[in-house]
Image 1: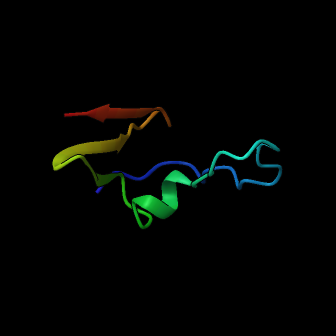
Image 2 (image 1 turned 180 degrees about the vertical axis):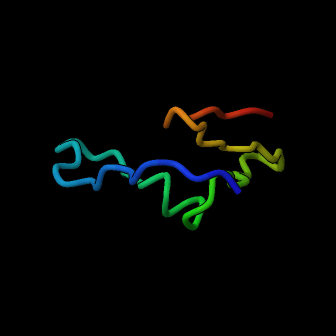
Image 3 (image 1 turned 60 degrees about the vertical axis):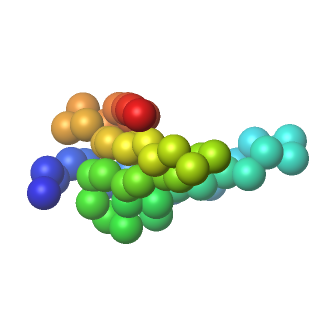
Length: 56
């Protein structure tokens, strides 16, 4: 597993009605997670630089 700097906490989530998720929670502290949408699986990846990449 890659190691990376501590992600920022969601201290002030947006005030609109959109849900907010911490990427570290989705990856359970790792650097990848699968997201299923309409029977298709996508991979969410956190890069060493702290960027998010979502691929099919």
